[in-house]
Amino acid sequence: MSARRAAIVGAGPAGFYTADQLLGAGFDVDLYDVLPTPFGLVRAGVAPDHPKIKSVTRVYEKTAGKPGFRFFGGVELGSDIQREDLVERYHAVVYAVGTATDNRLGIPGEDRPGSHSATEFVAWYNGHPDFADAEFDLSASRAVVIGNGNVAIDVARMLVLDPDEINVTDTADHAVAGLAAAQVEHVILLGRRGPAQAAFTNPELRELGELQRADVIVDPAEMELDEHSAAWLESDGADPTNRRNVEILREYSQRDAGEKSHRIELRFLRSPVEVIGEDDSGCVTGLRVVRNRIEPDDSGRLRAVSTGEEEVISCGLVLRSIGYRGNPLPGVPFDERRGLIRNEGGRVTSDDGEPLPGEYAVGWIKRGPSGVIGTNKKDAADTVARVVEDAEAGRLNEPPSPDAEGIEAWLRECVPSLVTWTGWQAIDVHEKDLGEPQGRPRVKLVRVPEMIAVAQGAIHVER
Ligand SMILES: Cc1cc2nc3c(=O)[nH]c(=O)nc-3n(C[C@H](O)[C@H](O)[C@H](O)COP(=O)(O)OP(=O)(O)OC[C@H]3O[C@@H](n4cnc5c(N)ncnc54)[C@H](O)[C@@H]3O)c2cc1C
Ligand SMILES: NC(=O)c1ccc[n+]([C@@H]2O[C@H](COP(=O)([O-])OP(=O)(O)OC[C@H]3O[C@@H](n4cnc5c(N)ncnc54)[C@H](OP(=O)(O)O)[C@@H]3O)[C@@H](O)[C@H]2O)c1
Image (cartoon, rainbow, N blue to C red; front, side, top):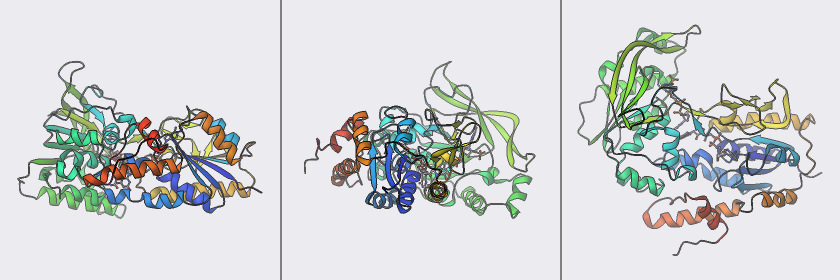
């Protein structure tokens, strides 16, 4: 009997871990991505000044080298191909499409010029082709980054890195130029809750205190914890990461005034209520915020409650970093409230809760936009366990057309510019060759037609 065949849609960490484990379970795997390039947020999210983290792609390259693996890049589920096309050809279809869009604050002025989501800013500096033409006016001296997660730290740090630090990274060329010309000297990181509730991880917070040209500033008054937070931190229920965050922030608050040219300042217990501008649709001139206090809700969770006391922080740039959100895929059940594919433990379920045979979800689109790269490995193991269970119980999909060559022929008809793993390897070599003379890991291609031309062997770097 020929191997069972799985389609995985989305070649980010969750897609690759799932591919590896399904190959291990005896499936043949076709891994699809809308981009000609693999690796999802490892390429388009992880900060360019963190190259070691990006080197996790070596693990994924090993997966791609295994028999039974194929990569189909430049194929969008929902436009180039549809869910039904996959169900017709695969015993199992796994959605690993991540959560590409951003949460909204829902406040007046959110879409003024100069107010952007971190999602867009990150995709721009990392060379995601959909954001290559995005424009960011970085001429203001003060920026506010809303949110207290690691993405907020990433974007705050990128704004104050020295051009020399950026020049040795794979930051997209348009952003290398844009960031070098930036006038931002003061970045305020704004949390709606207190220091004890910040979602930063310790190494990322610590890194803020070691920046080459920026001091980190915390007003000691910000570190006077309310009674609920103080009691929670002492309790067994507190996370050691939060305890350590408070220690790191306390140390920052005790530092002497620094002498560096730039600064990142952390302010807490403030929620944005309006992005203010010159007129109704004019550029950002400030952020109106309300002061909060911490109170437990009915379940004991410590939440931010408005005190009604407002203040205005003057600034010319606002970056909203309050978490990512999934987009629905045509024909795939979606939980609008949570912004995720409807699923139970990875099995996609219909609106009335019945599992759809042979359809699964994994990664951020399954469980929500949180967790580091490695979290997706365990998550993939959970989803693959469901696939294997269903295979053993005869509950997979029974596709009429699972033939490997037939699938590729059909796909090439739908997407004549299909990029295979060999095509991606050509892009990879090309980008690295462009980067080498500049002492950079790579120079990213940011235009899809150029990527395709390189993948097809039509463009070479002259050496
Ligand atoms: C800005 C940022 C920085 C981060 N930095 C770190 C870090 O330093 N260290 C760390 O451990 N974790 C980091 N993370 C977390 C980590 O990136 C995630 O845990 C991980 O990428 C989630 O994996 P995923 O495969 O679910 O989604 P993604 O990585 O988003 O991959 C989804 C893939 O699906 C593709 N896709 C989407 N829609 C379609 C479609 N319709 N058809 C075909 N393909 C589609 C996308 O192109 C993408 O390649 C960061 C996250 C962000 C947002
Ligand atoms: N270097 C790394 O390892 C790295 C780098 C980047 C990202 N990541 C990971 O990727 C995941 C996503 O990171 P993330 O930063 O996008 O999300 P996150 O960790 O969930 O942080 C989101 C932040 O936004 C705040 N927020 C949400 N809604 C808000 C609102 N309406 N008003 C004001 N603030 C609001 C949250 O505050 P509340 O807590 O009050 O809700 C929280 O501080 C995380 O697991 C992160 O660790 C890791």
